[in-house]
Image (cartoon, rainbow, N blue to C red; front, side, top):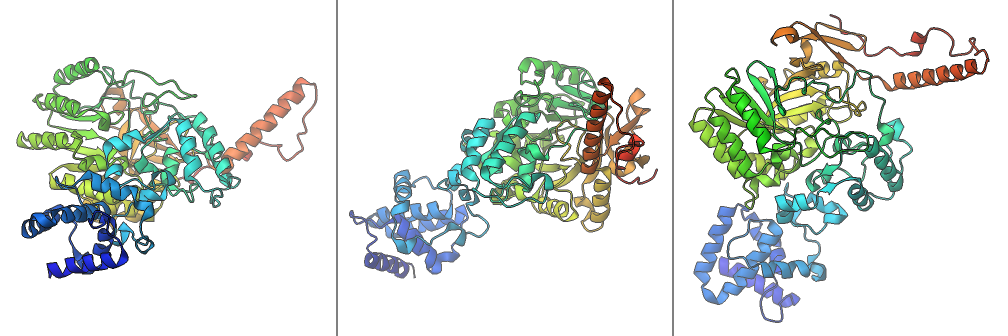
Length: 585
């Protein structure tokens, strides 16, 4: 059977004139003929490929070996099969250079027709239309081509966006109909935002640039000035009072037996809604970042000494920033130091990397995850629990690269949990949140928390009222297996810690009241308040009221009497639309 197939390849290629002058068969053509014949059932698993290659090379001997090298190089290039040691890069490069000069009979070929679900979706973006799978999943390539800063972002948008944009469902964005207007609005939004711009090609390729105004991934990372709302008066930069709860720089000790170790201030991407915008990322035009979270072994040593001297601490969260930007040696150093402390029974590394740069998991040229897997296995042998906490907010962030990465971690015994943030226009519907929970569970990533968005400045357009998270939990519970259901929580402003959203003791006039009796001292006795976002109508009416007040003040200073019989007369309270309906105490 095999000689007959090879004979057909040679015969068809000769007739179409696809031989090179040297007499070696065109790798590009062979890969296409392979795709269009009965061998399309070939498994693309590496072990299957290796077995096939070994059989062919051993059976056909030296005389056909040049043919086999070119043949399998073509298959590897178009089917995304991992390269074998004897693959010749020169043949791959030659095939790549000839991509635009192939016979017209071959141009219909698409790798997606061979491997459903493993498409090169990033090639829809003009800048990356020729980027291979090997490049795109490379950690170094992702870092090299990350978009850092507003100038690089503007250049990226100029190439990625179409000239005309579909309209938005948000009336505040109705005027943005062209690429130029979109870029101008982004530029103004970045200027007003507390977080700098840093985005990986992976996350940028997850955005639908044909319709970016309402895209749920775009909303999380790229601000539009026209969509921003004035901050609630209670919003602050450090709404959780982390600095107040830090006995030493970079360690938050709020709960009796758990502490948060902030090892770095850098992330592979910067989310608009970051709860640590006061310290994470580069300074912006509106905010000069605090320096105490910069990675430093001297600072780490102070933290380790505090943990060692506090025997009540059993659980350590290693976060930042993002631990993805630690070197593998740092992972080993931190992990071994924590394992050596007898009273530390468990610790987790927090990283958004799996959702914004998942190719690093299976990148054989990078040691971060192999180091983490070794650390996880060592912890298991010592009876200590080590896991990875990651952060997905929307199903569109999940691709076949994510699934392969998650499968690799699961097969190596790594425990992965996910924490989502509830964001308006991103994941605040039952359908979207339910899909996210199920897809995470299908990848053996446990949905752990869904957070009510923190009271952080500059993101009022992303916050939802407490009633939304209560409704989501009510609608989803019972439709998803209990062990897959996350806890829907509020991280209480003022350092009250995480409480179930439904555990409020009073919720009226847009303000929910909580208590945290598990905390020590005064913190366990006080009341904590979470404030719903102001509505758009509320904002417009307050702005209108402020404008009238200013006009009246100018009139009074000029000795004029304002018109008190006009439409703005009456009690100020009549101008303000009531906030979310109370849920009762």
